[in-house]
Image (cartoon, rainbow, N blue to C red; front, side, top):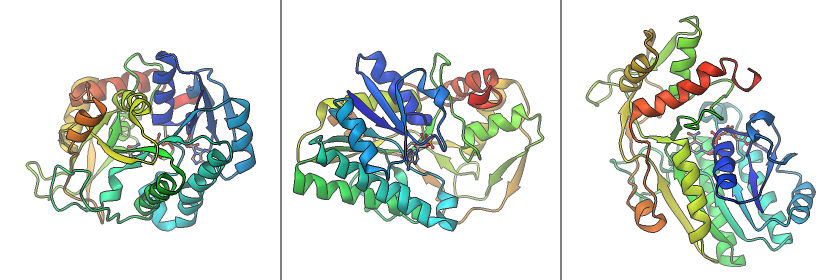
Length: 327
Ligand SMILES: NC(=O)c1ccc[n+]([C@@H]2O[C@H](COP(=O)([O-])OP(=O)(O)OC[C@H]3O[C@@H](n4cnc5c(N)ncnc54)[C@H](O)[C@@H]3O)[C@@H](O)[C@H]2O)c1
């Protein structure tokens, strides 16, 4: 049995689907503050807080859990600046409580959702796993600390850990069963599509058109959520006791904000009006992941790398669920 924390959230729900497809029994643990019961698609779900260690121990024992995929976290970079306590509690302490619950039950295999935010502003792209961890936001700092917690648990207690560092998760289940719904929505692709759905009532904001990039807007690496799910399943098969393995998960290519807007225009046939705003502090011009290690070590490469296809999958779900999981 695999315990998936945050399995009612965006990436976690796609990983649950992939695990079930490949025959793994799953139990979800989620407080449903950001996640959606409907995204569990009928998978057993324990509603609870990561900081409730007793409930975690009970869930692990009752379900005879053998490995954990830990997606649950708070993930708004901007909010982490104004409310760092929430991030320290749910991300750093949340992982500590989970690790102690696992240790109490002698479960030592964990895949941990890390992020390219641990690299901060890189000196160059593509970013490889050896780049220094110099996060600039409280969110990124809590994720780096989580990685450090996990390194200590590997060394001292023989935990087996894989820490995929995702770039920008994007898209939706190609079969349209799941999608992305956050309130507020800070991710570019759903923000563009939701501004289209609103008929321009919620105009899109583009932060900075004067970056040293070909069209002046920021370049990011949009990695398809279904590819992330596959990588997590593969990670279960390669983890080793006492070893902490970070691995970048990216599409290996970058797309600018204007390229994403153009893809949305093509997919939906709608115009995308947008307001140009000043650059946001701490937004690097380009973030693209080096993905050689994922290929070599995990046997994984992203399959859905065409931005138009990724946007189309996101749109298919959103157009059918204009109010998200409440639709
Ligand atoms: N979305 C991205 O582009 C991206 C990029 C890099 C890393 N990540 C990481 O991937 C993971 C999943 O991200 P997501 O986009 O699916 O986020 P999400 O908010 O959609 O999902 C997170 C889930 O965790 C749950 N949760 C949070 N704190 C909890 C707690 N204390 N107890 C129980 N449940 C709790 C939420 O209710 C939610 O269902 C996060 O760890 C995030 O930091 C995401």
